[in-house]
Image 1 (tube, helix red, strand yellow):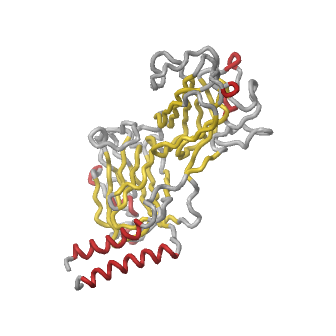
Image 2 (cartoon, one colour):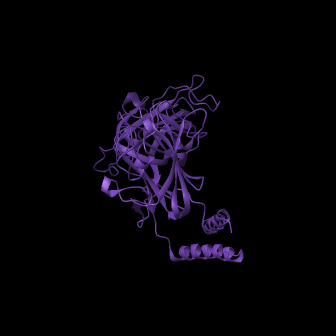
Image 3 (cartoon, one colour):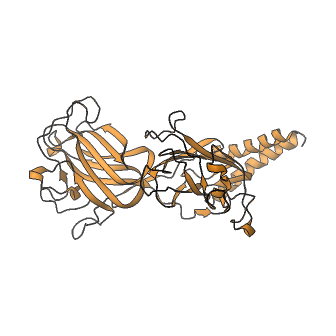
Length: 400
């Protein structure tokens, strides 16, 4: 049998096994009721979180209400555990465009004391006795200066959860709303929706994706299974192996840099070639491996978001299929590790790729790409074994 047909049958066997578990997605989301809470909460308040630098476009009762009332603080001067915007605004004009046509846009903003990765948010809003007075219409949510959600609440009262199309990394947040009447909207609570914790048995494997050519004697990490590296560009002939345990790079010893001169991300949470530069690095492994997720370590030059060498969108692909997308919102500081575990279980393959967009013309800096491995239950192991056995059976039937 031709080598190509043999490889095809083995890959088909693996695909049979992996298709019998759900197509992998990133792990489930949970509501974190503390993360956005004010760091100043104490006494009868909810537990303190990471929220700070609260500000608003206007406060009710002559500007005396307290924004922290929507963030776990129960000592507000108007209503103990809510925040109310000022009265006297212009009602929503009904055209589904935030801030268009003279309507009042109420804004509540805050920071967190450190960068956080969130999947969305939960908000509790309520008009007077559930009616239109102090109700909300259009609601938008922004992370790191980019609007990541917009929907029409149509004066509904209660609690709603909103999950972004792409998880967002940042420490600056903004909640915008238009109003149903001239009375300022009431916000009872804003919480973060975050990825569920990594599985307890998840382990970052620092060697599996390392380059096969690594030489410990030359200061590299131990060799792994990665080979056949293909990159969209390289700054000054830099080595893609630098992101895979090699420490002898042409530009910086232990990082890989894409070439300068690209087009920055357009901010719409979609990788779109032709309107923005898509940097990519692809590799094979010398055998089929099973991974439960990945770690990527990136860094910029300035420490300022959306600046030189800042990283925006990240796609991770297995066998040419996108299995995860996150938005790092132009992260430009020192090395930061982002770890993503697949919720649907491990994925098997021998071809992997990372696609990225950049903030500016500056090429992105990759420090490391590692595999996350999650031991599968015995039933999955039997499934893989059976599928591979089927592949071998087909090979034997074809006389090989």
